Structure formats: C-alpha cells, structure tokens
Amino acid sequence: MPGQDRIRSVELSSVVLPLSTPISDAKVLTGRQRPMTEVVLLFAEIRTEQGLEGIGFSYSKRGGGPAQYAHAKEVADLLIGEDPSDIPRLYERLLWAGASVGRSGLATQALAALDISLWDLKAKRAGLPLAKLLGPYRDSVRTYNTSGGFLNAPLEEVTRNAVRSLEAGIGGIKIKVGHPDPAVDRARVTAVREAIGEDAPLMVDANQQWDRPTALRMGRWLEQFDLVWIEEPLDAYDVEGHRQLADALDTPIATGEMLASVAEHARLIDARACDIIQPDAPRVGGITQFLRLATLADHAGLQLAPHFAMEIHLHLAAAYPREPWVEHFDWLDPLFEERLETRDGRMLVPDRPGLGITLSQRCRALTRESVVLGRS
Image (cartoon, rainbow, N blue to C red; front, side):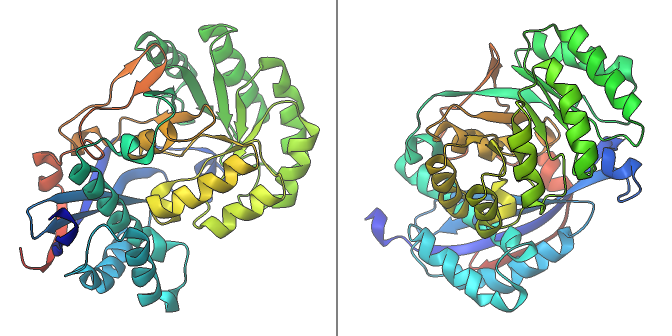
C-alpha cells in the first residue's frame, strides 16, 4: 500500500551554476557586495522503497552554498526509514536536530531542499502537479521579468530587454534602482516607462539601499509612473520604516525576499509594513513553512509575489487565494530538462506531476560534491 512506503535514500548535490554575465544591483554599487557571478544550489533527491523519487532545491547567491550542503548532510540521514508523507513531522525533526545553529537563516535554507523534495514526492505519488495537490485557485499566474533590468546593463539594453519580454508573453517588467546617483534612477525609470507604454505593469527594486528620507523622496517622485510596486526600498529588517512608507505612499510597497523565517515575516505582517509580501520558499525553510506564511499573509489581506525560483513558486502562487505575481528568471533553465510556458502575460502551471522538473545532464556536469545517505 502507498501509505506503507518508506524513504530508502537521500542524495544531496552541490551544484555551481555560472552566470553568463556578472550581475550588479544597488548593493554592488554602494560597495556592500561584489557582483554576482554564480548561483550555488543544493539539490535533494529522495527515493523510496517503492521506487518513487522527489526532487527539491535550495540556493545561495555570493556566499553560503557550501555551508547549506554541509548542514543538510549532517541531518538528512534522519529521514531514512521514515514515511515520506509525514512532512510537517519530518521537518520538525530535522529542524530540532540542528537547533543549536538556529531555526532561521542558513539552517532552514539547508532543510528547504529536503522539504521541497518531500512535497514533490507527495504530489508525484498522487499523480498531480504540486499546485493541484495544494488546491489551486488558478491554472496560470501573472508573471514579470527581472533578469533584463539590472544596474550593470546599459539603459538601451534594459529598454530593449523590457520590450522583448513583453513581446514574448511576459506580463510585467521590473528594473533595478537604488543607484548612488538618483538622477540615474530617474532616467532609467522614465526611459523604460516610455519604451513599454503607460499600460504595461512596471515595478522597481531598490534592493534595500535607500535610507528613510531617500525612500520617501524617491517614492513620491515615482508616484507619477503608476508602478505595481516599489520593492525593498529600505533595509529588510526596518519594519517601522516600511510601515511609515506604506502609509505615506499610494504606490504599494513590496518586501520580504531576504527574510529567512516565518517569524521574521510575521513581524512585517503584524505591523502592516507592506502591501505585497515576497517570501522565498528556499529561504524560509521550504514549502511547509511557506504555506504557514501564506495563511498569515492572506488573513492580513496582503498580495503575494514570491521571490526567484519560479519552478517552485509557480505552484505555490497558483494556490494563493488572492491574485499573485511570480518572478520570471531564466537563470536556472540549464539545470532542468523542462521549460515553463508563458502566454498572454501569465505563466502556465505545468500538468506534469510534482514540480514537473527533471535534472538535466548539464546539472549533473556542474555538480561539485554529492553524497548518498541510506541505500542507493
């Protein structure tokens, strides 16, 4: 019987994906970070006695990837012999096994790959896409492009990328702001709005690089562009500053991608410090934690726009009661055999079971370390 299945093995892999072009946002131009040249991913492949398999992943940008892999390797053997359907219980067991290093941040990001793999497995066992297992409100989600609007790209390239993205069926455009020279931000936003027209959805992202006076001043100037949102105008942990800004501006405020636990998001939600919340399932600990957070956000009447990892977040956004957005990034495409489809401004939920992803040969070739726990 399916309910009697047990986990036979867990395979962990650390994969380093180089980016074709180094990426710079406002954090780089203010000297706080180096340009991003690669993404380090932690993959978990869970296999059962009955031959079923689940795939999940977490990731790190600029730092922390090897540590995620090391922590997952320390605790993942606790899954061997367990019923893979008992996901919340298994998550708690893994969490407490590493509780001395905390219940947020890197520790939970390491567990996220395992948790997501268990959910992928559960949906495959049911023969359903993950969204269908969770209970969707829609079979497609509004999508917007970010990867063409980084600050290192010349303005002409940014406007060209924006137009091409809309022509390719993506529904909105997000560009990076937060440049040390506000005139640069003004020129970029003005040019992109002119290029895509008044009716196309447009968002901006300051990547936490404004202080409170600058955020208010820029926010007031940006009101004229009818933006869908202003993202991360302030430090991610400045709850009071975000609340004040959300109260002062008509343009919605979006934030949350850098927070690494449900508890951190709960502070934002309780303070009514944003209009649109942007959790990242790999960062908050996986799908189990994301679903807890989504319930809180819906109860507070917030809109949802998950950060990055569209392969995961498309399913979760489809199951959110309020009409959400999902972020289109093609960076991870080389790692998977399948491609997500966009049409008429929306990303379509695939009909394949689970997340609907299969690791590519390219992904295998980019693997730096791997280990199999249990019986392969």
